[in-house]
Image (cartoon, rainbow, N blue to C red; front, side, top):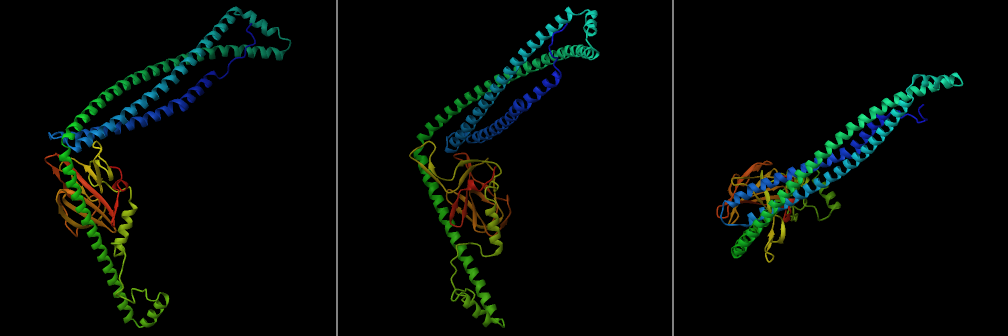
Amino acid sequence: MPGNRKPLIGCRMRWGTIAVFLFVFFILPAQNQKHKLNERKSKLEQEITSTNRLLDETKKNKANNLNQLYLINKKISHREDLIQAIGEEVKGLDGQIGTLNDTIFRLTNHLDRLKKEYARLIYSTYRNRDAYSRLMFVFSSKNFNQAYKRLKYLQQYTNYRKQQVEAILGTQVLLGNKKLELEKQKSSKLGLKQKQEYEKNNLTAEKSEKDNTIKKLTKQEKNLLRRLKEKEAALSKLQRAIEALVAEEIRKANEEKARKASNLAKAEKSSPDASASKAAKKAESPGKSSASNPSATFKSNSMSASAEEVALSNSFSGNRGRLPWPVERGNIASSFGEHPHPEFKNIKVRNNGVDISVPPGSQARAVFEGVVSSVMSITNLHYVVIIRHGDFLSVYSNLKEALVKKGDKVRTRQPIGVVFTDAELNKTLLHFEIWNGTTLQNPGNWLGSN
C-alpha cells in the first residue's frame, strides 16, 4: 500500500499565488521603469530632431558661426543623455533576464521534483494495483472509524495523483512561457545594444564635426571679438535706455501720486469738517501727511501709480516660472549672466537676458498682458519692443519689424514683431530680457516649459 506521505492540497492555488507575487514584485515595477525610460528616450530623440532641423538651417551658410557651435553642443549633450538612457534600459533588461533565469532554474528544479514524486506514486500504485489489496486494506481495519479514515485516505491519494499531474502540466506551461519571455528580453537587449552602438557612432561623428567647427571658428576669432564687442555695446545702450525709461516711469508715477494727494487735500479743505479732519491728521502724524502738504515729494521706486497697475504687477509676479515663451518654437542659444565662452577660454560672454534661436520668419510674442512702453531702434539690435506689466518690463530685441506701437495694450501670446534673420551668418535670434524696475531678472526663472 502507499506509504504515509501526506497529499499536497491546493497545489494549483499556491502556484497561482507565486505567479501573482512574481508579477507584482518583479514584472510590474520593471514595466513601469521601462515605460519611463521609453518616454525619456522619445523626448530626447525629439529634441535631437528639432536641433538637427535648426542646425540644417545654419549649415545653409558656408561660414561656420557660433550659433552652429551652440547647436552642435546641444545635440551632443542630448545624444549623450540618449546613450545613457539606452544603457539604463539595457541594465534593466539584464536585471529582468537574471530574474527570469532564476525563475526558470527554480521552476525546472520544481518540475523535476514533481516528476520524480509522480514516478514514485505510479510505481507504488503499480505495486498495489490489485483491487483486492485495497479492499483488504479497508476491511482489515479494527473498527468502523479506522475503515472510514482508510477509505478517505485512498480517495485523497487518488486526488493527490490528479493534482500532481495538473501541477506538472501547469509548471511546464509556466516554464515554457518564461523561456519565451526570456528569449524576447534577450532579443530586446540585442536590439538596444545595436541602437546604442549606432548612437555612439553618431556621437563620434558629431564630436568630429564640433572639432572641425572649432578649428574654423578659431581662424575667425578676431572677427568674433569684433562682433562680440559690437553686441556688448548695443546691449549696454539698451540697458541705459531701459534704465532711463524706468526712471521716467517712476517720475511719472510719483507725479501722479502727488497730484492725487493734492486733489485729496483740496477736497478736504472744501468739506464742512475740513478743519477738524486736518487737526486730527496733524495730531496723528504731524508734518508727514502728503494730503495736508500737497507739495510733499514722493520718493517711491514703483512705476505703478494706480490700483490696476499694482494688481497687474502682482499677477505678473505670481506667474513666476509659468510665463509662456516669447516665441512659439526655439532653443536657448545663450543663457543669462556672465560665463566663459564655450570654446574660447579667454573670452567671457555677458548676457542681460537669453538669446533664443528660432526658425526664420518666426514672430516674437508677449509673455504677459501689459502696455507697450517703447518701440525703438538700436544698431545691431534692430527694433526693440518694451512692454510694461506694472513694475515689471519684458524686452524683445533683434526684431526685423515691430507689429505694435507705444501705448498699445497687448494680451498674452499676442504677436508683437518678426525676429530678424542675419543673412550673412544665416541665424535668427531673439534677445529677450525681464526687468523688475531697474533690477535685471534671469528669464530662465520666469519662463515655463516650451
